[in-house]
Length: 319
Ligand code: NAD
Ligand code: UDP
Ligand code: UDP
Image (cartoon, rainbow, N blue to C red; front, side, top):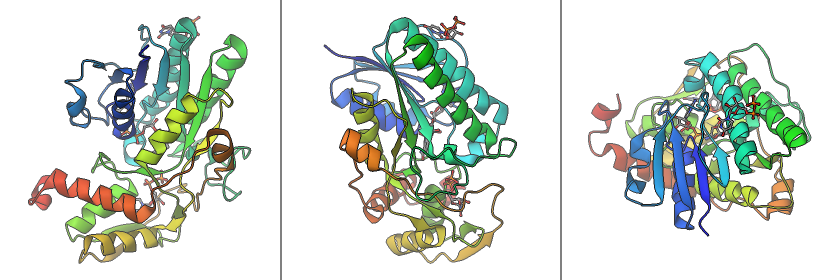
């Protein structure tokens, strides 16, 4: 029997890869998206598949459909986009979670929340295990995202305790790959686009802050394993343990693209976490999951994607 699977945010970067994988494994996919940061071009190649359905809808409003599983990915994920309309960002995480949990409660569907490493804030424990409660500013410019996602985790936990909703919570660490939005300001897409144009690479702060980057295919595999695991509901960290400074990332991108770009240093945004690396002991043990694609290889695929996307007139089309 085909499973009917709802993917909210399915026209986004991660969502489009997830929809593609679910269709490949024989499921029936309903993609719901309001196209705030996602786009039809991300799912254009799926539109002719009879088991793929697209619905324009904002999850801050109720949704009545019949499904067996729900992946709740809808939410702008880059600082530039989630800070554009911060009230809507919190509404998407909080009202959106309430609606999707209400839907899961009524249909008895299992529901997975795309949570984030941002729930750890600017962490004092390194690397971050799931047991760490985080250090998050509740009133800063990142709070709409961080606190929205924390509240969504609370709602998921309470719907589970109070209404026996079958939940899964994934704490996703920085993920990159083809179909990243070139305008959303995330570091990997920014650096690659800048390098391909031979423009200055914009390093915020002195570039000594660290992140751990997971390739999208590895991440999607982790999400599907968590959803289908009957032994653990989470929260569970999904991310790559390789940790790099932003300076190291810039140098890798310059090397890979053969770019003539130079580094330029801009002010560090407020509340920008100093360091971030997942402890994935739990994911290894409970899901037998760990990433298999190293940063160089993943960056190579991503560079290839951006080259194809913009073709020869890279400069004109991007700027
Ligand atoms: P993305 O911006 O590409 O995708 C988000 C999608 O959600 C977009 O298609 C957008 O149009 C849609 N959306 C936003 N608000 C909506 C609303 N109210 N109703 C319906 N659709 C809405 O981002 P992404 O990187 O694909 O992230 C997907 C999810 O994974 C997000 O929830 C994000 O918080 C989480 N996540 C991503 C990362 C990462 O590094 N990519 C890390 C941690 C967590
Ligand atoms: N909801 C939804 N789809 C459904 C069932 C519920 O969007 O299939 C919404 C519903 O409109 C409500 C929210 O989910 O605002 C929470 O539902 P719940 O049943 O928990 O709360 P109640 O309806 O009792 O307020
Ligand atoms: N960053 C940077 N240059 C850019 C974009 C981002 O140096 O052009 C830095 C940013 O300050 C942060 C890191 O790269 O320290 C990761 O930023 P991103 O927005 O990709 O993810 P997040 O901060 O949400 O982890």
